Image (cartoon, rainbow, N blue to C red):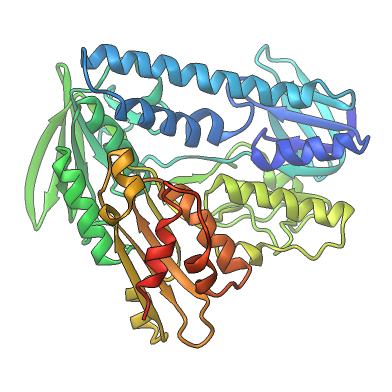
Length: 451
């Protein structure tokens, strides 16, 4: 039996940060990770970092052979993720009180785990506290022929393919699908998105959705909306994707099918029932402090079924650490107001409510809007696509929400988020002295449009 004060299942963002903090306090830590390719969690290895690295490479994809450019981009992506992966490993493994185990963990009892290594050997592990941070895994819908198709890829496996798809069909028009559409269209793939929703980007206001669809279409991305994929048939060199739209059967061929229909909590093989840990259709059930129904067992990150963002997983670490060494006041309720970013050629960043929501909920507001082309730095960066839009309260002068569809939106939204969390009047951002030329100085003009 191997024992420790703290046992972590999964090397995700919350786990690695919390494990490091507890190790720094002299506590013993066991970190169990099934794959030596997943140190650091989903974001570093198969999600945020590799996709954004590929997006950057694709935007620099100007001259030369498309396949060669793509191959070089994949190699660069592998270098980036490999460097970060082993940096994360050594931040923990180099600490005297930390033991990292590569194996599959399964509960045998509330405080006892069995770890099975690749060679088939096993160990019994026990801990005073157990933290589950095993992330999420792609959802493969029940479509005839899809799972068995040799042309099917997920958002994780596609980035390991060194051959550039000629015709890429993406099943699912959510944020993951849109990011991949942007990346592969840049590299030269012929991209088609098939989505069952009645509207494109249904969670966003129509003004934004229309602009994004128009700009993706200008890059060559095609859309089949209100369409339901019914069957996938492998043929020589390509697959036939059959779908229905408006009651009519249609089909398209592709040499690569990307399934981008969401992700689910990765809990299938953890033996949670053996520990009496409660779950639902979204994942492990936790309270506002991330405690499961079993004492001294926590669940953090995607596995608890909340919004799947790395920065929320990091905040989960803060919530749990506050219970262990602080006053325990931090809760998941503080995560209700966070930025959302979609990394396209022109990124989208939103926070709070948009104008359509304000109108529907009859919330009083004033609006400010600025075209990206009015910002000097956008011209310097060579991308004047989009606009910046904010809503403020006429009574409190606080910011109610923002929609930024412009270059560097992923950076700008953090300033807006900070102002909202600190309850600053919008005039603070309007009158701030910013460096020049920067995208941030757009706030001077943006908030000045509010009358």
